[in-house]
Length: 374
Ligand SMILES: *Cc1c(COP(=O)(O)O)cnc(C)c1O
Image (tube, rainbow, N blue to C red; front, side):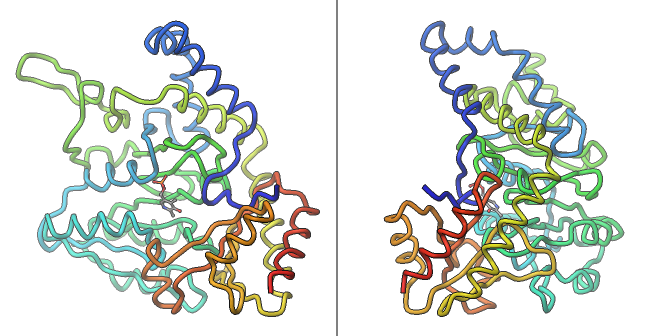
């Protein structure tokens, strides 16, 4: 099997799988509450571990059931009034875009597009022109789901902060692939998932709320773990990011996610980034040399996501043909990134995302298989 879909849902290390299966067995033996109690220290350790992974403090981390849940929770906590503005980039992810359209409808805020520059990444100069005191949020996708580039985060946060706007970083495709350091990048809010480059389980996500901006949020709904039911008619909200968590969660998945993060930290995020970058570059160069294949990646700084099309074969068909040969890729289509795909006149592309565990021989075999497709 040649596995090239870490941007979709990656393969877990055996440590992650064993941890999850082990916990499910323990739950079947002693019940979920006691099984969780036995792992209380590990569940608590997840916060400092993710703080290390994401360059923030443990109190700034919370866990959810997906990147989208994290993103929705954060965005819904930002007070928006009629006339307020929210800026998004052309790489904005479908789930986020739909949610913002709804929020705009409910609040009277306006959603506006930051154009891309000529190499396809967010245009920081254009952003500066758009910013004013009505901009409450700049939503930035670190690595677009449909490939190619890494957006210039620090430049965006500097500009946005001068105008007083919050910056929410969608780190769904960057966490586990590249170092994502909240403090270095200067972002206020982060959302991310477990199942992609972190090699964690499905149904897991995380978020970051930097302490300095926590009191600018107005979370609307929380439960009795996010807030203490202090008296019959009173509640007291938690002061840390765990305000955004619900009491119930999949403990096996959380433990698997923790193992995945520890695994990545042990390998080192710089090492991982270098290895992924090398593999993606090999694929890009190789694919570009195959007659009838077009590579569509943009940007100044390439990511680990490689997108391409094959003349005469719809991307879904390419994916199916490759799956038949035990080569796993995915298809990225316009419903996920309408602004970017629309601008480029693309409806779908094949997406190959090689993690560090893919060997050079497998990459070369993949290139041979693609050459044979036509
Ligand atoms: C996959 C993806 C998401 C959504 O993640 P889920 O875990 O499916 O909610 C958000 N943003 C980007 C850029 C993605 O690629």
